[in-house]
Length: 220
Image (cartoon, rainbow, N blue to C red; front, side, top):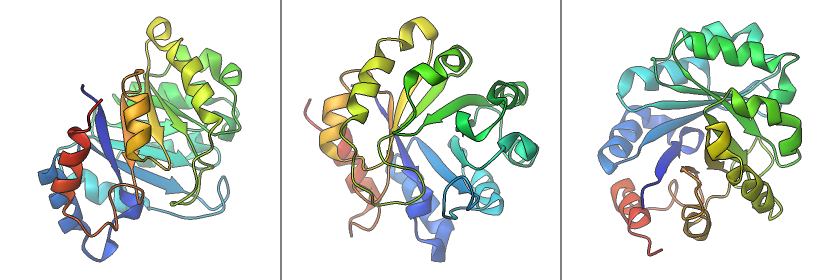
């Protein structure tokens, strides 16, 4: 069974970011997930524009850039100018007055447009945008911090999105508290990829290659 694994780089060791990128790449990670926070849309700061640009230049693997910022359209050019064609950019629809305008800027730059859906955001409120985007990042925890607990009611939201994805032509990705049992449950149902943070990948005292191989070999 094929599913994508993305490394949540806000959980990486910033003391040697180059080594982290190299080891994750050698270990078989599919893409690098970059969380950008402005301290306003969420009450925290994570990675910076410069961190994102460094990783974009250090690997040929795709980047998944998750913008947890207010009014991303005001600064979207800064991010798009430091990415490569084919990278993904997610915005939160409720963070923008006209999210479709921001998504069109992402499309025009040759990037993959995506939206991130918070636990408290209903599928009905983003229905029109599901026909624009190619990826939907479902937050299984409230955004802004690593190491949070999974919110069980998010599973029903994923079920609803799975019923729509073929008709509307998008893929579903999981972000937050991603454990092996969640991959075992939701990958067979059609969730395409999983963002790996402290629950499975980082701070476990094991080589990334070993951890990623074990995930790939899960028995479904």
